[in-house]
Image (cartoon, rainbow, N blue to C red):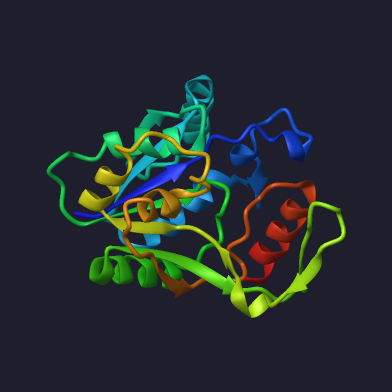
Length: 224
């Protein structure tokens, strides 16, 4: 049995909105619902776990009633960090479960079904997989003097979600104490010494962070 953990703990501060960004509408529907629908489209049998701050959960339930949102899911409390939120989500997966668990940003509503499938299939074979994109802009490493130098962009990749793992591997990884180098879920698994494979991502899989991102999201929806 496979699982997806949707982590949605944003407060929308950079959006300049009082409404948390995962609840902001895209085409009249909260972004978080569109995210969850994409995984339901991939596999209706996928077990969905939604990680939300406790103070946002009542509002979420009202939104589900208002939009008649009926995708079955389990809601668990968010943590103070991404690491803690992902760990809380994993606690909702049975300890003896076998299969693949994905971890996805709630504000990435345009991940393609093909990317989801690639990540789950690759994790099934290799234990851990993340979607990535090549870097198209020039990158510059900033030195201590503030000047820095250009680096080869071919040496880097842009990392997206879902990040997918063998369930038992993920559970072992998140038993580790938190470290500042845990910048995403894959870095937690890598700390065990396990290699993380890369799958091709999709450009539309943007993370909604600023008001401009919402404008891009509306354009993507209209032109999908």
